[in-house]
Image (cartoon, rainbow, N blue to C red):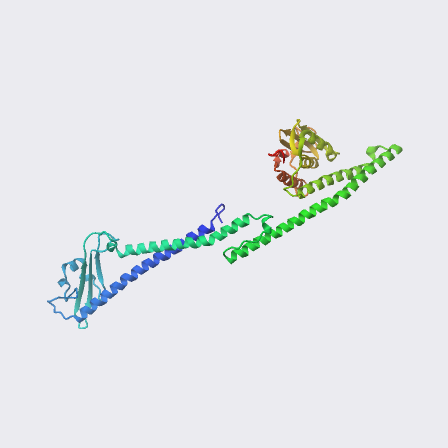
Length: 445
């Protein structure tokens, strides 16, 4: 199939049927015209042969019977016949004719017919007939040739066929277009409305299949949304228990280390506890993100005046635990910028962007730049642990559904819900994320 070639089913069927109808009408017109002339010639030939066999004439006295001129010798025929035909080319019982006309599509102004008839006694009779009419094409259709009349009839038949075909196509395509418009306008609210009745049974069956498929998809989405919502709510309690227990253990371990005078940094228990605490923070952020995504899109969000630069700095501090044990440099260029934004939603989105950059940079540079309402985050992974960022070799982080890719998918959904512009892609030395924050058009939203 040729790429980029899009055919309209309506036009394809219409032009195909018109072509087939045109060919059939043309063939039938030619066939009917040919049969008409063959029938007329056959009757005339049969009449001329009968006249020749039933009329008695002598060798020297040709006769004229019923407008037929009968002679025993060819040279006894009228001069018009002698000019039009040659005795050497005559075939027994074959009708020879010569039509005189000014133009192919006008009626002949003269017609000459000749038949050579051998008799049973060995004699030969020549029978001719001539018709003549006024010269010129005339002013009325009576002067048109039968061929042209056949063409007019064929064109009229083709026009009637085309008009009938257009009416049929219109009666067929209108319900299809109605079905298309109905299917295109289906949403969660329209799915609860009854299925409209279309003119044809096949379209009703197709509409039922579309409706049932979308119902199944909606039920699946509702189950997933309910599961995410309930699971996120249920996770809040164990996460809160983990965090409170972690804080309690940190205080207990701190007292024990103070009493035993053991270095805090050398304690394996402290390191393990710190990892648990960091994991619980990640689980808390992810749970809040999933809960916010599971909400109804029409639910209004509370908007406040937010200092975006302060939010970015605070999120970098909160997520700094992701950089512990790594050789990562964070470059912050965030001038003071205040915008009217949903606080919680903005924190979730920007936090996910920074989290992804911190998580997937083991040795390199993370650049965070805020210009106006545009926040750009770039993470450059340094190969070989080179300390000088200008001389280092960088590589792009691998994207998969279990790591960076999943984070980007979540950010995409979040920004779509908030109607922000989000752009992510590879750069020569790493990966960058561009986020454009937009204030609502209506401040009272």
